[in-house]
Structure formats: C-alpha cells, structure tokens
Length: 450
Image 1 (cartoon, rainbow, N blue to C red):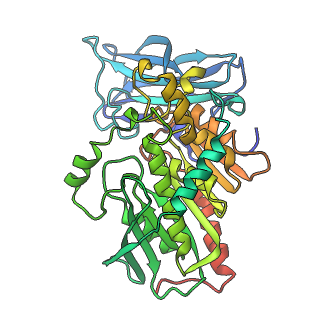
Image 2 (cartoon, helix red, strand yellow):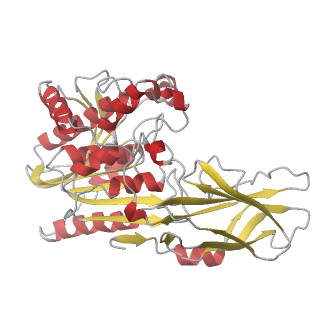
Image 3 (tube, one colour):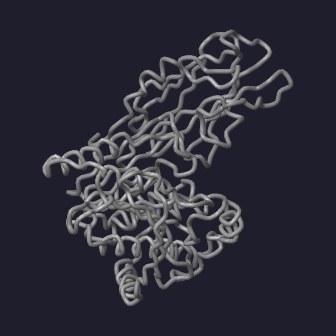
C-alpha cells in the first residue's frame, strides 16, 4: 500500500498496554500493528484485563465490535482471570472495524473508568479501544459529485470577489517578543464576517515571508492566538480564523451563548442556505486577505487544521490554486451521505434521524462535502486519520483522501489506537512543515524573531 505512514510510538504502546484508573488491558495488541488488512483477512485483537495489576474474578471484560461505528457485529464477555482474551473479525468488504472494551462490575453494570484520558473524551465507560481498516484504498464516496459542482463554486468565488474585504485590524499584546499580533475582521458577504488573529514577525519586509492559514476547529470558543504565534515564530505571516465569525478576544460566555444558537444540521435544504457554505466562504476570504499582505513572498502558501479546521483547510486547498501545501488532519465533513454506503454520516448529520435526510438535503449538501472538494486539490497534501475515531471516521476520511487526483503528491498518517479531540498526532505533517521552514530560511541565511 503506497504512501501510508504509521506513528512511530505504536509498537511501544502495544507492549506497555492501556491503563486507566485501577483497571487496564495489558499487552493490548492487534496482529497487524499498523491496523491494515485485506478483504477476507482475519483481524485478531488480544490482551489481558487486570485490576491494579492482578486478576479480578468478580469482574468481566466486555468486547464490542462495531462495523463503521453504526452496526454492532459482535459482543462478548471475558472473565478477568489473568488470562488473555482473543477477539476476531473478518470482512469481504472494504471498511472500518472498531473494537471497544468495557469493564463489567459485580453488579452487572458498566464500570466508569476514572481518569480515562488515554481515550477520547466522553468515553469514561471504556477502558480501551483500537481499530483497523480493511482495504482502505478501495473506499469511495457514497454518492455522485454534482454535475455543476465547479460552476457552483465558481459563482461563489465571483460573489466573494465582488465584496470588498474592508479589513479592520487592532493591534494587541502578543506576549511574544518580536511578533506583532492583531485581531482581524473582514467582510465576506455572508451573515457573519471573517474573524481571527494575525501574527506577523516584527519589522517584516515586503515579499519576504511565506504565509500560513489555519482555523478554529468546531468548538464554541475563541480562536487560539497561540497557534498563529507559534507558526509565525518559525518565520512566516500566520493567521487563524474562526469558523463561526463571532468576535475574537472575548469571554467564554459570549461564545457559548452565540455558538449554541447555530443549528447547522437544520440548514441543509438548499445549496445556498447550508451553513457550511458560509463557513467555507469565510475561509476563502481569509485566504484572500492573507495573500494581500505585503509581507507575502507571492509563492509559498500553507494551510492546515484538524477536524472542522481540517475541513476548512481542505476547502481552501481545493478552491484556491495558490495554496502550495495543505495539512488536513482528521477532517470532518467527509461524506454527508455516507450512510448510503453503510457508513456513519459526517458532521453535522451524525445523529439526526434518517427522516431528516430528505431528497432536498441529500441533493444540496454535497457541494460542501470535503470528499468532493478533495477531488479538486492540486497541491502537496498531508492527511491523517485514526482508527479509533468515531467523530471523523477513518473510512470517510479515506473517501476524501482517495479522491485526491493521481499525480498529486499526498500522504496519509494513521494510528489504530488514537481517536479524536487532539489525541491523534500527525507526525508526517509536522515533519514536513518543519522541513519547509528549515529549508526556506536556510536558503536565506536564517531567521530569528527580533
């Protein structure tokens, strides 16, 4: 399988086991450490449940096997007797299988695991998890790209170009010597403006710097100024834009109250009314503004982000031909209609009733589907996904990755053991970004924050 990279810590983790609170699974292993299998090949997961390092005869381990996170295909209990358990699964179809493990107490109830931070948050009833992919290179989108997809986005860009940016910048304390920080607000011709933070090396000369654009992920909060500052410290002009368009540098209550009013899953009736059209238009306007900065060298334009920020990065990489490198981590919004192929639908339609997915909704939302936007990416691109990610499921990410055209330089980093909420580290992308800045400034005699 080509261009697949696995996190280097994987083998050590399998030897150490996964422990959370008193309970832990020692030597949790999948027989293919990278988590990749072919059609019909048997997947074998083994390990030993212990309590404080010893057997607990009054407890059991429950192993739940789920296909594509939508169908439980097997559930079985094993005694906590110090002996290894063994769970197997095989499928003749390409896709994703996910193994979740729970502790069953003497009362027959699931035990909540205190301090289970090794897992995705909100998984306190799981002691461990691991996943695998079967023939991921064969995974494709569940429906057909709209015939007028390119025309739609051409018209959206034309409408955006007709709206003046009217940038409003306010300089604030960066807390970093040698880097200037600004709040930014831009008009994008949609219901909310572009908002974010801009970090610029102090005394930056014209046409001397690369630019880097990232985004706030799908959280109800302020954008992280530190993300922009950290990248600016490598030697570039960096911006982080919000997804929601509300003011930056405000108290948390402001974001909680305002973001909770956004009901994106209710807006899919028309192409123009779908909320994420507006999100992607704002992302494109942020890209236009960053390219207008006098410090940009006119050549190097990097975009990146994870989850919803990854979706925004993918949209900009697809629709702005001047992007040179894209880092698309665990992207959301890949496969709004994925249930048609037996997979979990992408956000924001994860949990809505099937009756909500009317023909009008199914027809209108693919214009913002990252799996289809990926087919328009022409720049060097780095994806990542995790095989224990039930939020931005790996098979849906692969439906986007596999849609990136042949001939485009691309790579995908994977990990069978990690999930969402920042638990998956895209080491390949980090290495590429560091190499880019090292090479760039080495060729120019170096860069130091003044």
